[in-house]
Amino acid sequence: MIHGSLCEICPRRNSGFCGALLEDVAEDARATAEKLQYQALRSGELIASRNQSSGDVVVICGGWGFRFLQTSDGRRQILKFLLPGDVLSANLVFEDRFRFPVKALTDAQVAKFPREKIQAKLFADKSFLTVVANIYIAENQHAEEMLAVLGQRSAKQRIAYLLLYLMKRISAQSVIREHRYRLPVRQQHIADAVGLTVVHVNRILGIFRDQGIIELSDGFLQVLNAVELERVGSIN
Image: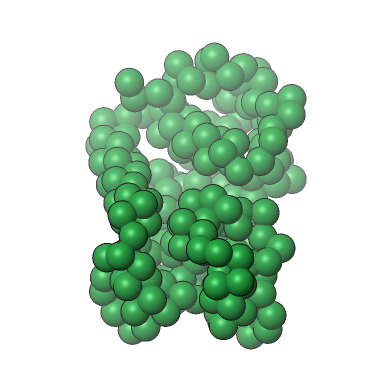
């Protein structure tokens, strides 16, 4: 467990869910942040299990995570990649348990906000209600798009779509130079997100590299032909 306030030094302190939650006057926001519980996690560590009860709304502060479903035969479907500032499971705003397990993709840190305080602000602050509603809308939109991609698109299109989605999310948080993105996902994560085998993912990434579209290695995605990647991966 981490003590002290990561919120005080967080670069996303004034944006998204946390920004809307802690936008009160400085002293009140500082007092709220200082009372939070913070937890450090190692890469691959389970943050929450399915149906685990929780009295908190949990936010990832640093590093990456992912929400997933484990099937009865042992296969894994990644439902969403979680970046800093993301609520691990938006349903926790209203429900007292995780619907799906969550795992740390990299070394990560999370903060825990008491649900009762979240709900009190939700019903008292229209702007915060709008932020929470937008989180649900964005998650629903991505889930519906991913359903269409998995059901109707080729392997190349699935992977290109996922990369475009992650690029957009990374760009919203970081300054991107020379089309180079820090992307800590491995081929297994990509395979589990788009319903392919690792061998198939490796082959498609090799095709993209040979065609001069992207290169993915050492935790970085280098986009060489953004126009072609958009053509392959866009569903609009």
